[in-house]
Image (tube, rainbow, N blue to C red; front, top):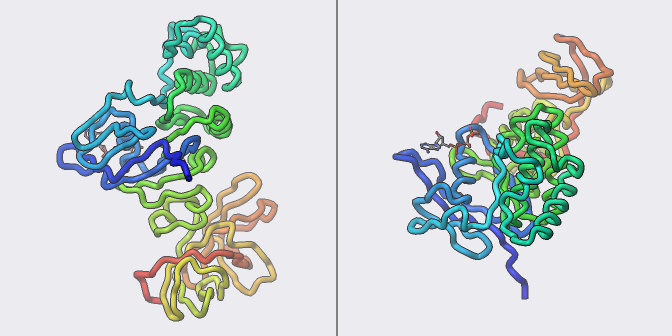
Length: 355
Ligand code: ATP
């Protein structure tokens, strides 16, 4: 018999403020130990969804179930402190007058002092702050403070951890480092977690599953790989990663003719020959090759250290992007040879049939 290991279940919830519908029929599930991430532009409803799961907001319809217990529905709300959840916020929210050890121990109700100390020591080790127990928050860097906040949230052994933009107060380098560390810490603790961010690279490096939200609805709930390589809608394709959408016509099974030439690859949609499509082309799908017959003109370039991101104008006047080793330094206006290397032809039904 297969045991159900769903830890969080959000079932078709609706939420409005006054007359504004902010969450519109959202459903999602997280299994025990899974890390999910809600990714979307500002104002799409990410924080509201997290606050509903935490019990700070009521819903008009639908239900939230945590560890098999219904905690929110149109007629019921279990208060946050009875949900067995931990929370990490972007501003760390540490107690400034308490040491690191005291901050972490704050929410542990274990009466036995020795057991409490053992838990704190274990968490200090887990977040890599073994030597910093006696320090006060103002003596720590932002990244260290956020690791203390994480340890404090994990201390009462919650079933579910909710993280709201936990890295947004940190500088870029620290953010990248901490996202990887946080994933390792969450995985080592085995906790189920749901994080909110508007930064796709954070979502990709932390989450097992990513939900892309627009205007209060989840457009795709999937692995980071699929969100990037197999976006299900044009909206998701445009929101996630760099890329260009160019017009194409299906010319055969797994064959599309477009401004980059005749492309072969796995079509993401079943399409008949003659079907007009919009084709997603990622910058890494376009290789530079001086010997290629397909040419494009450099209209913009952005140096990124190891690579340069070129904006290229095709003979169809469409724009595509190419990520090229920065050893090749092409000038604006230069005509360069390109070769498309597209394994999966990610297409969407075209509204524009002008090709
Ligand atoms: P951001 O990334 O900017 O934090 P978000 O995706 O987290 O955005 P929310 O904070 O969930 O978005 O807000 C979604 C919408 O709900 C916004 O239009 C916001 O103005 C509105 N909203 C949120 N909380 C309230 C509230 N308490 N009363 C009225 N409207 C609200």
